Length: 249
Image 1 (cartoon, rainbow, N blue to C red):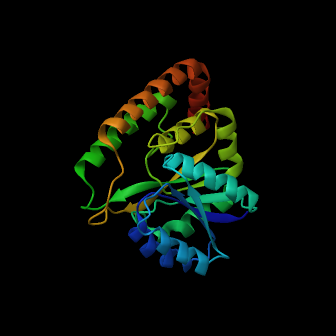
Image 2 (image 1 turned 60 degrees about the horizontal axis):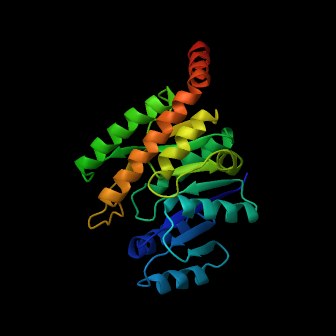
């Protein structure tokens, strides 16, 4: 098994520039996908990539296509480079990179499992984010007829490329703010195992959110509407999966 880091990036240059030296100490190759960022700071990022050409790969989208599109581009590139698993991290420095070892350790024992962070927040978390997560948790429980998904929004994950490609082949997966949630719901539909590891998440002071209130709320309403329809169509299979899971316990 071969692992590489994947960082979707959009206008988080200075946070990413602080993050990269910390990641470099872990001796893991890294694929950065710049998703149509503005020119400011891009030259500095390119310099770092040139300095670490053997371990950092940079892919640039000509225009902003969305976080999901960036992760998918990185997954294709990772496959061509011979990697079996990608470790997705957000570019804004929210995640505790010290937990990477825990994620990899579990993944090595369970190579077909999607390993995801279950956020442990401190006082920096905005209340609106906590409430939004609770709403999402409710809907994904309904859409999967289970409580397998402990958190559908965390961007700190390990994807086995074999499982990830199966999802891309069989389903339409959203390319923007809907991506993280949709991947996990459809993983449950496909009987791909999930595992969640508690991981500290902070909201850095002065951090910038790319969430667009009207556009992205409309997107998420459409997402959960589609997933509810999909759940109804699959309810006999999902009910059977749930029954088998309960019997195994």
